Image 1: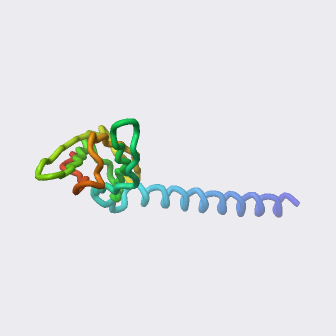
Image 2: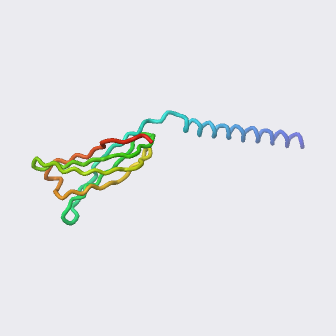
Image 3: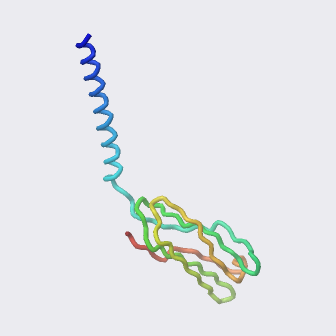
Length: 124
């Protein structure tokens, strides 16, 4: 009986060690593997009137795996040859993270041309 018990314990120990090594290998490959550079993008998701202003809702998304720091976003509204600009900065945007932002304009963006874009970012 002791021989069977030792064999069962040895087999269980061997299987546990193999599972542990597999888990360590998967975690290591995830940490060491190739990661894509930060890739911040913006998308306009809505425009709504609020009191006498117009709120432009956007989503800032990092399509890369690495974080981006000091992400600068600019919104330009062109109406009748006049450009009104607004900027915002997001301190840190992690890989695959998205953030909702709002720009506020006095004029209706539907009366002109609205462009929202990322002007720059740093890699932390």
